[in-house]
Image 1 (tube, rainbow, N blue to C red):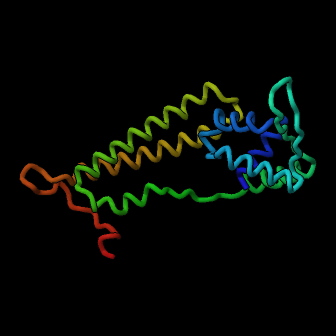
Image 2: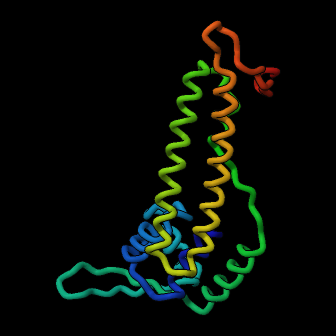
Image 3: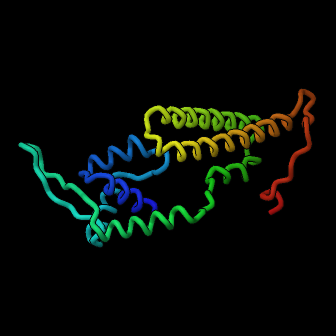
Length: 189
């Protein structure tokens, strides 16, 4: 649904050929959507078959033919329906990385801590990349960028808490743990 909304919304703004559409998504929208080129072409073909998008073949000079896509009136209706649906729902995010946290006790504590530091650095790098987008994207995108930055800040706060907790529980020089271990659900199963 959201990928169809994206493609229809972009084609609503202007007709485009597939390469141009994919380049725009890769360069301007990759912070909020993971849409592979092959999937985009598949969806464009499906939208064409279903009558929401039309394609015209054009050729410029000696260049190969290319398909130019534009939204149809039926596609406009679908766009409006999908937009209203998208704006009104909340889909809780899933964090696949949390699975590793469930089983991190299977690793030596120092290794787990080092891996959490690596994750923290990756979050910081991603936050920097997203923050730079403010300078390059139109104002209509700033609310989405703010949304992503807020999530990244929350993720960073959470990872910092994990790091502090794991650091406090590392064995001291005498072999004792600096803090009591927090029970893990996976340990009791």
